[in-house]
Image (cartoon, rainbow, N blue to C red; front, side, top):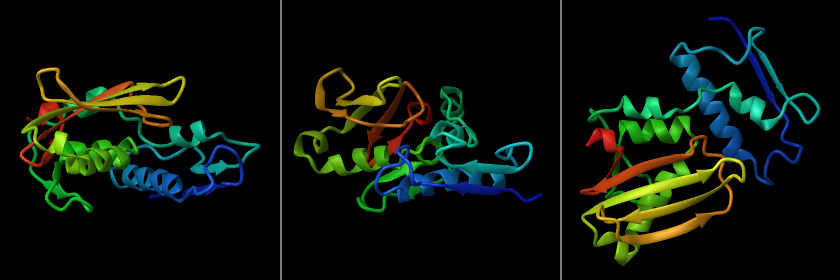
Length: 181
């Protein structure tokens, strides 16, 4: 495999005050793509990130794009992942892929930790929907009981989640994609 270099200059407004999580997410996606033999960041195998040469969007474009079709490929699961904070919760390979590729560990954390809420916890089946306004980079997260009865809803003031919407289900302390049911 050839060599490529990624330089990320976080001294501009494209990154938050503490860019560690965001930079880690970008690097994880690049590493994952490299391990899978996916295309590297550019033909010259060099990517530079600075205020004057590349936007955050261009850096994100170097990584694999998450698509609805990607998520539909997951049917069933052969491996479960234990949630690091909520040790009674596990999630499937499809959810792991969503978290890695979509930079959405925050969403998995949100679904898992909201199981502490009595109104959420008592529902044996939960349908979580994230609807993203891609232009405004905001979202709405709702949880219903599978029959349309909302048990939790909130507004997400900022997200860079790449899809317009995604649905997760929780059943038996397992977070899964609907296609994995």
